[in-house]
Length: 455
Picture 1 (spheres, rainbow, N blue to C red):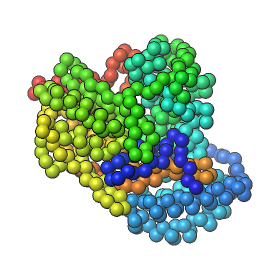
Picture 2: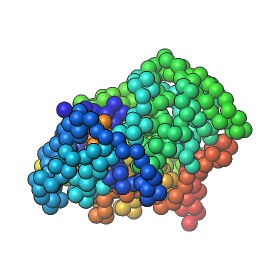
Picture 3: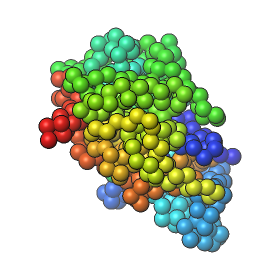
Picture 4: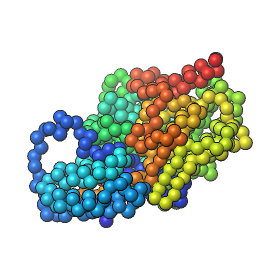
């Protein structure tokens, strides 16, 4: 029986307009290890009969899932029954977990598609955390990104427990409940350092440890702006925003903010593509209320995606030409064209979109589509390359298995999966800039918009 990952729940498509939020492995993860690490001597670990049985059960689950749920019924031209006939005996003969995992990786690799992979148990557990690490909806109000191997605080939400405790952007999280964070990031980097999805996995691994039941405490050790270690105990609060529910998906906290920056430029940010009935009118009002502005900034940093149709609806305020599309998503049974339908009022000025390594799924389709159509300039760092609707499940042997059940091709004919949206202007968060109260990505967007107005 397939068991869902606590951190990365298996999500289902509801109709043809939903892109589920789930983290995706970019490559067969065993191959992502460096040659030096692979060459290090490792003690052999002989499998028990029970472990061998669980490995075979895991093999069968992976093989059957790909056979039944792959978006291409021809499985990319691979003779799938022959793959099973060839590799299942090899799995039965595996004497160590490394050998068994290598066989699973070999099977998945036969597809020659980057968005299918096996996540080793040690990495799976590093991301997912211990049973007592989380398990609630309480939040600190801290947003984390892995920068130079450290858990850097890139944002402190206003009114949050973190702000009340005096924590500032630019601080570094070193320990949570006495457990160091560095080994967690090192474990994730073993597999994902060269992947477009490293930021996504690393930030989730840290933020999961920061979470817990509302009202519970988290004692966190930081390195502050002066380089000193400081401890803060935060009482977790309900997440910012409102709780949105959609079909069978888990509840998602969604928030929206809009303000004017540099005296005249509207800035719009939303945390996820959920709660369309509430969110889309707010976005529309923020855009149409400033039709004469010198430019518009849409901030998708940290936005993991959500309902795909919302990307089409929001883009309608940015185009006055009919017949355009952001791209096409295909499953075994249907093709969904992300068509843009212009609204009655549209913003015609320069548009800047801010992204980072935690912008995924619908965020990538939105940003990549605007980039392909020449409607926006993208600022920040490469997105997660996790555009496909996919799930991650825990196998009986403890490893994780990620698979996609749809394919997506952008307006330019390229794929975003495993590649991500590459910004027109790369700008990275830095500890020094954050400590001084700056936002380098936002600042770069403002500078570009002002330059367009001066031309």
